[in-house]
Image: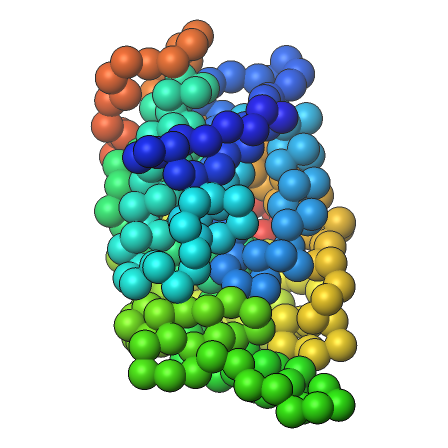
Length: 294
């Protein structure tokens, strides 16, 4: 694993996990889009372990922090629009292509990171496929749930405390958000129908009906407990070992099929100076998998 800073004025923190094994190749690269807020903290260790598992399948992985989150420069309240986080993902994709020599990447997004990843995929020709892990389907309910947990947490304190909540900013579970950003999050849902790339969706079986599946989507149901909105789980690590293994297997299979149908571009050794646009995606490249549910 190699830590480094990248982007304009080197403000974004990246962690590059190098592929290992006989399958290792520049064309097998994943960029992970993490959650935001306290969910970023809870899932940090899980995503790090997932990255290590992917490298054992010969897949390069770039983990990074959005601006104002984690160890990247700035503060969360300085982010005023979703487009700033979208631009961070575009920058991370370009960085991954330069570092590994790939021509396009697979985006893997967890929770609101899945919503961010899907928006970027609809804009970029450098995204070959998507893995969405428990993405935020209903942003209104998502923010309502976060605010409810925040209130429950405050009510537990012996003495009454106040957190920032004014016309311009609001604190939710330790993260301070710009009001304009929250309004944009609330009005920006997950639009998978606008995405041409193959998509692998991992979520609770109970939520399967909320996705409009088509020939480019596969859904894998899980039995994992939904602990995102449970107060007592707020400070516990979010680990999903079994589901992580299934995602690694599916990512490996997706790369195999994309390569088979020449969706990844030719293999190259070392960085490419001028990555070419992604070839049009063939629906045959993502034929039904035995582990997935249509």
